[in-house]
Length: 184
Image 1: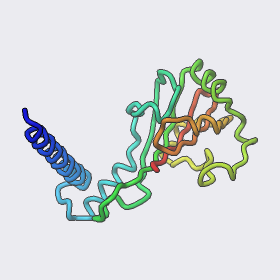
Image 2: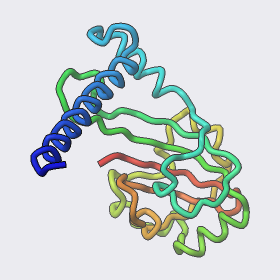
Image 3: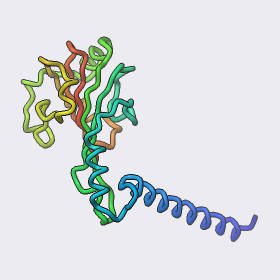
Image 4: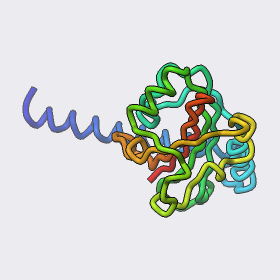
């Protein structure tokens, strides 16, 4: 194949990839908003349904919540702080909260590896947006321990490679991790 032919194949391949990306984005918007993507009520209703749902599927990607081990249970939700139904182009950020039930040995290893300390000893102004375990969304409250002994670790929150802002609270005694993630 000539150099000109190689360039032509590369240009056609790039154009096809771009077309697939545009079609994929349009299809995702259509699926999010329901039958009529031009009806903002339908989109808002589907967003409300999505935000109210408590999910139990394993967290993906696991790098967002490192070193949790083979946890037996998770409950999480998402929120769209902005307007995902806006007709303006651009990304939509999401916020996530969840409660993970850990195996006892994984809760202990997590606390030790990331040097979790009692929540009461943490300087609250060092945390993004003043986050605390009291900021849990109502649908997740039933999955939290009734009398938690929260621990916090700045090093866990800052562990790469997560592309999301992370804050986590750990109760070793009840083998529970409460997390907050935010796209940025």
